[in-house]
Image (tube, rainbow, N blue to C red):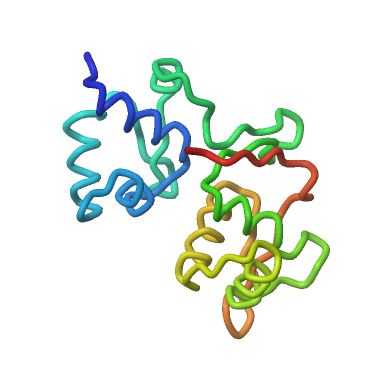
Length: 166
């Protein structure tokens, strides 16, 4: 299957963001809906992606070989935990301020306040929630359910190399 330049770029996004969801690809690709993402994946990239047991979108090994992009998550061979992740800037900032694995978990609003203090940014609470959920899918943040869902790292901060993508 020969890929157009656009399809190759979008495949690189998929490799970089994996594991991912339609909404994340929709935002990256500037599409109107998750169903447009699904349609594009099926029509243009069906040989290069699959959905895992949690319905998250992942690139095949062939896809990763085809594009010159590091996968979004590199697992440590001994522990199985991620040793490196490539994430958008907001996710990198969230990773750097969210409670550590030995700390008490914290709410989205608490993480938002830390971002404002540390980085002088003012993202929407929903964007912070999305960043935390994306980091959760990558295996570096866990959710602790209390009165509201709260978050903390599931790995030591210094055990994961976090780089900012595109």
